[in-house]
Amino acid sequence: MSDSRNNLTILQRGEPVLAQVADAVTDIDSEKVKQLIADLKQTVAEANGVGIAAPQVGESLRLFLMCSAPSERYPDAPLLPISVIINPEIHQTSAQQELGWEGCLSVKGKRALIPRYTNIKVSYLDDTGTKHNKTLTGFPARIFQHELDHLDGITFIERLDNESDAIDEQQWRERYMNESA
Ligand code: NI
Image 1: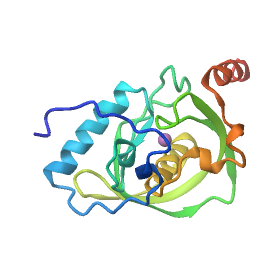
Image 2 (image 1 turned 120 degrees about the horizontal axis):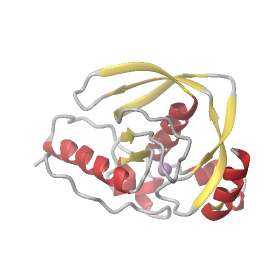
Image 3 (image 1 turned 90 degrees about the horizontal axis):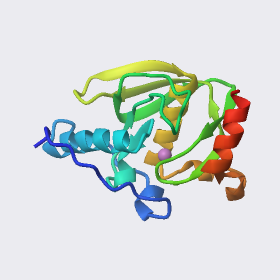
């Protein structure tokens, strides 16, 4: 039943499913996909995430949620409605990239500065199967690129020259709070 929501276990980097290229969703109306979306909403809210991708809960499907809202993990995140993003594609990117701090529910306790395109033109299906074409800018563009990476078997750690460029959450908190003061 899709009206019940379960809190799913979030897998950590090193699990093989997080390094796989996920499969396209072909059955948006299926009970399985509806339940997965309901469970992802519950799971990401519980974890204070701004996004979550199906492979992070062990489902190798091209589906993720964007759910930006300010929280202890992301104090400056804009409050946006939750979006269900299915079979996403990036069609065009800005020439420009910008660095921004990222964390990941599958890389617990780490943060790093990651370059992402400032603007992207994207398309995707929502949970009703309706196609959307959008231009995303700034933080939502960053979330989209981070989550799309999960569908291609990439975590933000693979975007670093050195894994040691990621810092502990506690160090980040001190640095970030100073920078934004
Ligand atoms: Ni992530």
